[in-house]
Length: 349
Image 1 (cartoon, rainbow, N blue to C red):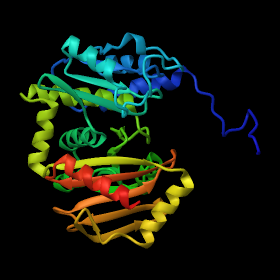
Image 2 (tube, rainbow, N blue to C red):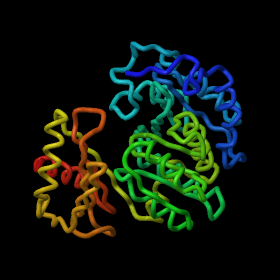
Image 3 (cartoon, rainbow, N blue to C red):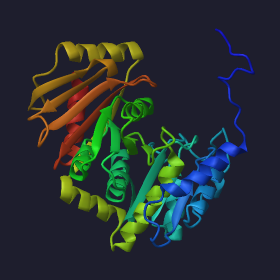
Image 4 (tube, helix red, strand yellow):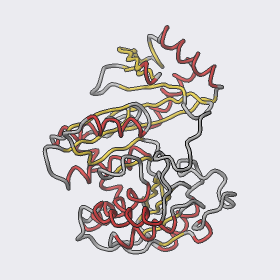
């Protein structure tokens, strides 16, 4: 393998000025500065984001988060969490407990490299983790309502919820769906050189809340999510209340996922079998259309009808794990019903 020389222009050594430039940019993420101060609990999950996140909140004019002390410093052994991924059940238990004890309005978690954001909110006497799509709806709705211009662009991925597209249409904003991964989102932004990317997300907790950097950024997303929560409180509601308002406006979208462990070769074969011989029905519902996104190795199956009240099921091999991933979305359907359809598709695989 050819290795570049140490003095190659392809290699750039970063120093503290990179972080300082980032922190100078962070205040521009804010869209509504006249919101009340709120309590927020935060964990860096033993990763690298802790110190930068606290400074980001400070320069953005937000109250200092209440941190999970034992998870604030980098530690490659991750001693207090089984799997340091905010998507994993139990990973945010400690920050939720800190939030509950302190009376915080929400709990935030960055993953260890701080490019993703997990969010938990109080609902009655308990707390619940927001799905990646729900976070995307809250952030996307906020950005679209508080930015202006005919040149705006929002982007999401094929496996994320289609609700962002409805929001964009209502606001007269350009919208695009890409393959999974932020490299494709960045590609869309670069291709639309006449547009200004104002928001992008993928359901796996990745969010881009401004036009740079062209990548997911968990710290900037945490800053903006805090503003979203503060504005909701100022308007006499909560983040759950905002989600309810979004559902009333656009329809109650429900999303679900299911991962099936398979070695990579078996996963490819399973998707190929489904491609060559798609089912006529799934759990008694008629498959009315099959879309094949071959470059992404993704199959999309529509049940009942295309769009509208139809159910959208998708399947693809994971690009990073020995799994096949199934994704579902429906409007005004019970989550358990959608999950049962995903299980029925798993049985077909």
